[in-house]
Length: 428
Ligand SMILES: Cc1ncc(COP(=O)(O)O)c(C=O)c1O
Image (tube, rainbow, N blue to C red; front, side, top):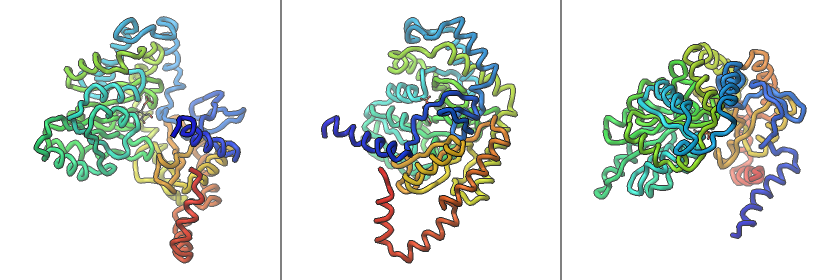
């Protein structure tokens, strides 16, 4: 298929959604107050942000970032390898390593480029990389230098064990096994079974574990030190990767480890580190100030937990279909893609900012609205979201009891009709 034809497949869908008035993505935000934003002159409660601790609008973080910008300028002027390395970068690496409980950390300009660069330079064709099936795109993008990429059933350590045993049992296997998981999964909000995955090292002592804790840092563990800290398995996570685009209220990424030689190697071989500009001073200092605040103010993480449990309990009580988790990411299952688009549009009209995730990000027919809690959400904002959700849940028939009634009706209508109806409801 020619390039234009391939592109037109996507542009045809987005045009159709725009014409129908239900295209929800790339909404231009004019102003942000953190828990509220302004879009097209309309003020909305933000219930979809990854700024879990609300630090992007903390006066101390903004002031420190502004001061750094005035002292060091707006851009770094080069990669760290050459002319862009700053004392600030080294200070942040030290703070990060101490925060997650590792010896050393290496920065990158984003989380995506951390996974891409670190995994890209560490893996060789003979290594076996075993990923949770729901791992983030940046992890899979980083694994292209191995021929042997396997996946295990989502959050299932027994499935991972089977795959590892199978690979190690091959007489010609002479590479490294690297098991990669997220700490909190970005879309489902599931917390990884890190205790069980870490225990695999008893059975397979030579495997290495790589934990992408993009959504766990600032959220789980003591003072938000992350998923490994939460489970008490920091020493068993060989690599802890994180990003500043969530609770660290900035932009940038890092990988931390006790394997000093491996980090030295990444520092000099990661292509996204060597051939990409350094993190600007303002972003660096913003992340560093967030760590200081997390260390001093554990009440922020506690408030996030309180907000999360208030919302989870209330959603469950009103019959919404949500997963069992303790994370602030709370996806609400809606149904077809089209229904999720319409639901998101009405949320917007009623003053709430939250976006849908559709196939192929989620299984067909299980499109969802991804909501996320912040420690700075005020009760009046949360109560407003709950009031609207309750009303819309009934209107759109997305509650557990609505599904039960529908499946009863479908049983009566016959299986063949159902398949036809479902496929015709799907826009994509
Ligand atoms: C699990 C996970 N890893 C990595 C990334 C990439 O991070 P960044 O936004 O800093 O590029 C994300 C961001 O969406 C993520 O959710």
